Amino acid sequence: MNYLQFDFETENEAQCEILMALLTDAGFEGFEEAGNHLKAFIKEAALNMEQLGEVLKTVPVQFKQTIIQPQNWNAKWESSFEPVMVNDFAVIRAGFHQPVKNVLHDIIITPKMSFGTGHHATTFLMIEQMSKLDIRDKNLLDFGTGTGVLAILAAKMGANKIKAIDNDDWSIENSKENIKANDCSKINIEKADSISVNEKYDAILANINLNVILANLPGIAASAKTGTIVLLSGFLTSDEQPILNAIAQHGFTRISTSSKGAWLCLNIQKN
Image 1 (cartoon, rainbow, N blue to C red):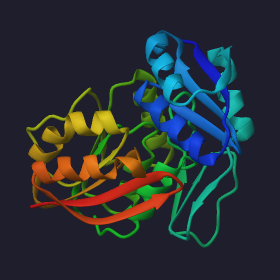
Image 2 (cartoon, helix red, strand yellow):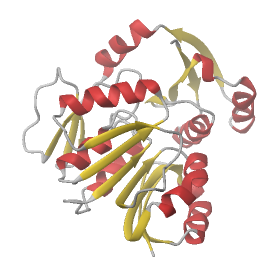
Image 3 (tube, rainbow, N blue to C red):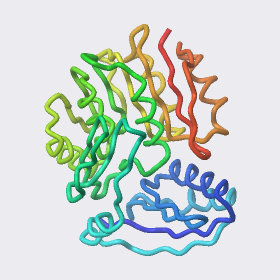
Image 4 (cartoon, rainbow, N blue to C red):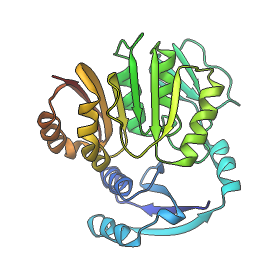
């Protein structure tokens, strides 16, 4: 399976963040930021030029497009993947990095064709919010697990039972490898497009994008008990009010909000 790489030149950081959010909604899966330069990645078969055209109407920027062969993708990540520190709570590193001292949770991730290394602001925000939770002996759902990084962290934090779901074959394969590398035995991986409402959870994590979160709020609400904590991210600060309106309609109350750049993370609780 080939991936496409799009290289965009933006005017400023704010425009870069908006472009990234719109591309996420259009199916792009991973990003690399360097100043006003943005690289965005999408499966070749998933590219919808009409959707991309709509994005570029909102954020009119120049770009160039190249094909990344699968065999080159892993080497690309290995050459550029640096450890990510989230305060002294967690470090996300590759297996070829040396262990990091004086950090509570050491997580080994080989991203391959999945995304979720902590480099993106939303993953950082989710981990930062998780550091404030007590999920020991809790049942937890990680919706849109990607590399499995959040599920792995939950296991290291003492969660009792973890279900991690994703709709992408590469993510499922990659998360299984990362779970094994971190010796986490309490994570159940499942390929799914939506949340099964046959089980209730004490905590739910959803770091995806605005449209997917809004579409799946009924399932999130149906899977939550009274008092269940839900962390949501993958959307811009400008999307805060639509999200707040939606969560209120589904019986949630906002506990706290955090942001990094133009990105937002919400901690909400089921009434």
